[in-house]
Length: 479
Ligand code: SF4
Ligand code: SF4
Image (cartoon, rainbow, N blue to C red; front, side, top):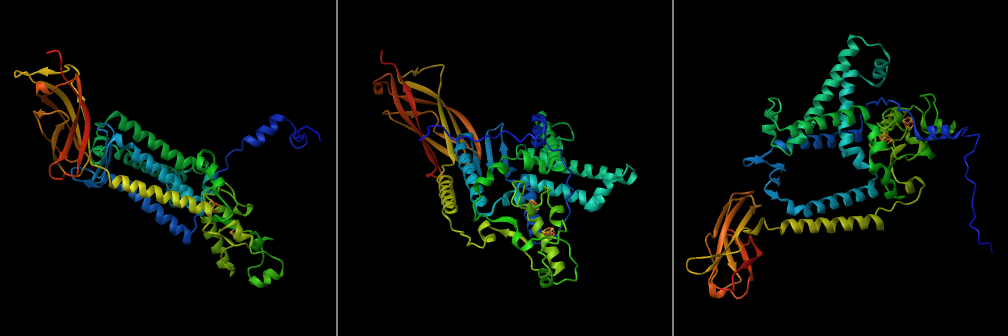
């Protein structure tokens, strides 16, 4: 037996690629073709618009919702406090954020295995804002054909005002987006007063400007380029697909051979004449926001917005043909094989998702809305009182993570006869306080240079809110 590894010559065909440079140029770069998206109505577009409106309203309105004397959602970075309705989270609890991100990732995996890129088509901010910008474009510059004509014609007063108004509205939306985004980190009611009067913090101007430019460019100019070339999800989602994943597909067996025919031909007559159901009207391509032809098969550019389904269904209705030439289906169904909804991979993701949601809910529910740190006075190891007893001082920082004010009782244990000069600390809801506390021990209780003691903090009105911290109590054995 030969011990050589079998090899194949894969040198590029010199006829197909005249020079190496030419080959690279052809494969690596294609100049952008502007996509004039045609507006279409239909079931899926109503669904998509509905979800877009819900998400946009939630994004724009949430920072305005008050909660007591603060916004309901406020990520207070300088104060290191993250308020979400009645709950306040601190940087120490960032583990919860990791849990949340893992849940989101598994949620995305689950939905992708089940229904492909529905996230992209119906909920991704890039799609939501792009569809909004296209909607504005359509209102001001007209239908697809009018927009193509307008772009070809020389500048005149009509074109100037239409283009000017479109960009002004795009910029206004982008400004509102940037301001709202910053409004999650700075109370928005103050921000909208401070921004125009030049009283806002420099970073607020920077981030509003950054998101203004980012939104305007991404949704107004780059659009499908973000999905095709920049989004990592577009690249890896295909590995999660299987033959039972719901995808937007063209039914080739039913549609081909495509071609124009007399409208007077009934469905049966067209079939008899050898026509497939696709009349090659190109409407499915014209409505596609990423500019692809779904009849060429599943492509990674497809964001599953289903505009082509609505477009083709409207054509089928006009022709008197059954709907669904383009539809949500699976590869198995297209080949006439059974589709398996309950399959191991999907069930695995669902199980992992449910377990993680359960653990997250349990962790949040079991969370003690209190945190405190104990720091010894570093300037003096200990003090000797007039009575000859030993005292140590501690800086105690208490964070009340509850939605109510609390008075906390402080107790110390671990050494006989410990007394505290302050044993009550009052902290308002979602706030923190620092208190210096001196703890004194009888001299005869000190048996070694350093003792472990325990400090316990308990909310007076809610004894179940209670926490312990270990600390060291130092003394002098030489006396
Ligand atoms: S919309 Fe339907 S009929 Fe028209 S080209 Fe596309 S697949 Fe064919
Ligand atoms: S092919 Fe159809 S579903 Fe995919 S992006 Fe284009 S219009 Fe949307």
